[in-house]
Image (cartoon, rainbow, N blue to C red; front, side, top):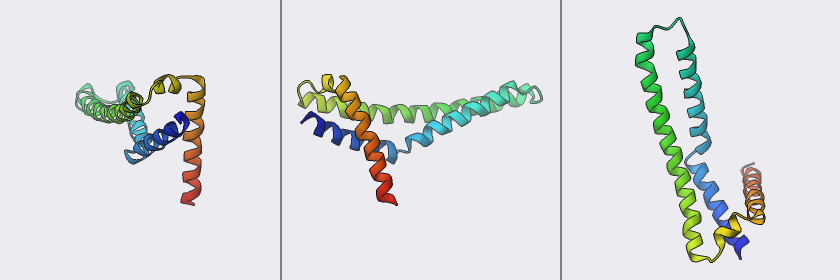
Length: 118
């Protein structure tokens, strides 16, 4: 029973991550960080320009990071809500069997979804 519930939660969580384009948010934060580092380390850019652009990049990074945190919290809450209805579900999720099953279910779901899209 735990495996079936875990499979359903993994599918829902994966869809949440896909719908909210979580990987795109991660890539955006990485790109913004690289841009900020380039600007800060570039000696040919004036301090005046740096003072204007770095806060803008920081604000963008903060917004995207908060979006990522909110999406992550939605997924975590999904697991905790399920654990309130099923006894020892959290223990199962954090056991070796649960971690391995979660990984297999998520990878399998991504693979099947890719096959269906083709």
